[in-house]
Image (cartoon, rainbow, N blue to C red; front, side, top):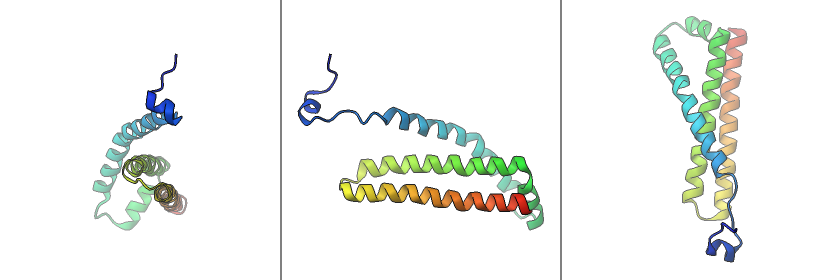
Length: 126
């Protein structure tokens, strides 16, 4: 039994076979972002206006450093997936779409690397 639509049969186009995986990755990162962002907001409110040494000391705690790294990773993965959907839905020129998708990925990698470097530097030297 063929499950393709008549238009899909004519064009020879089928499912990209990764929509469900993308959907679940976005949902999992959204759920993980809830407690992570609550921790992040608590940390920001707690150390807003605190002396620099006190904030560095708090970030030097291994638990705090690991959770902050998870905040960065989960947030960036979620951002990248969301931007990918926006680009795929609203950019119709294939060359521009490919370029924007690549920039989206590169942006997430660069920002993630810089944030993780900063967290690790504070964690190990603070």
